[in-house]
Length: 170
Image 1 (cartoon, rainbow, N blue to C red):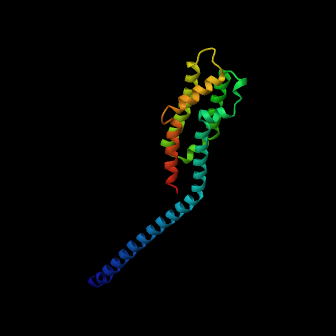
Image 2: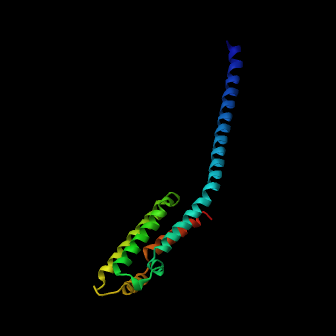
Image 3: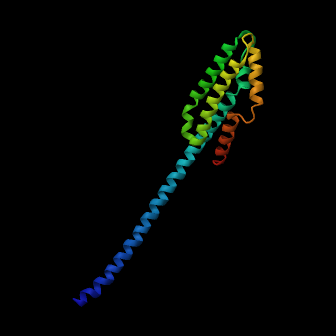
């Protein structure tokens, strides 16, 4: 019996040591494969995320009153028509870029949503403040003036957050 133990105990120790080493090895290999997979996925996703940041920055730029008013012939429009056009433009731009939320953080997406809502409210509020005999040109001037003197606008704040997040990719 003692003879058997002389051989079994060292064999069990060698078996246990081999098992521990192999377990560590397989664990390290699995981690290495996972890291490689993530690195490969990151190579694929980074350009897509950068395009998403570009598209969202365009959304924020295109939905500023100055930009939206540039394409309108204000002499032939009423305040209501201009207001409706601006609201429609903001909503269309937003809906067109809705899928980009997948590529940005929730905080940035929330700021973009807030910018959209604030812009819509701003356009409506300014229209309501004008006298009944005001023209579309008066409305445009008041929009641009009020927007410019508003300090950091929601669009600018969202754009800053977007740029900051995009910097983490570069």
